[in-house]
Length: 108
Length: 120
Image (cartoon, rainbow over all chains, first blue to last red; front, side):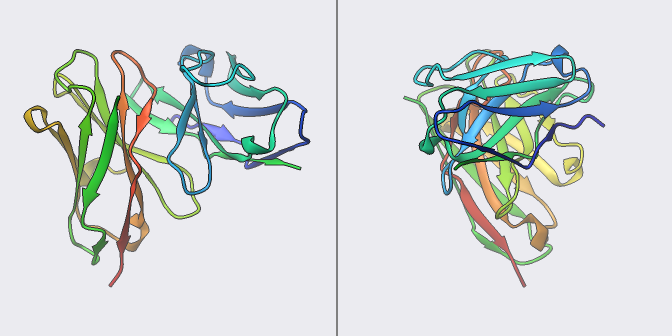
């Protein structure tokens, strides 16, 4: 069955670039979206259709999707970016959606 | 402005059926391409996609839970209802509903979530 795999945790220093990856079979053939979830809050859509940002999302959040891996890149990481990040895609063969296991971003 | 809010019983015993209602505003489920999904998150764990209903009443379910889930919509009331049968303590989670815009796969607006606890 189709699965999305994320590293459990990523650490980054303030001001540096954080990369969070999401892996799945032939992922480049599916649209991937990314969510940020801060403690005690509902998820927030960060990116959709691999690279597009909803209104109000800062440009320092960007995305790519190639081969089997989609990547969320956070440039100039801030302390306020400390959160859990989830990727999501659709399993077209069975027509249902699924999430990756989430990545906890720590800003040291 | 799009808003969604989940409601329903928050404490159940094992084997009982959970019924959750998502009441929304700012959009219509009669609009072509629009959908509403349910997602859950056990305490300290990852998000899990459960089910989705489209504007045309097409429905999608998580394969792992399909036999226990039913999603329905009431367009006149701006509500989507999720039922989960045979609840178990492992179903303890915060349950969210979320909106997806026309022909999109992303969830762009989320409710605040409701914590459902299953315990004997």
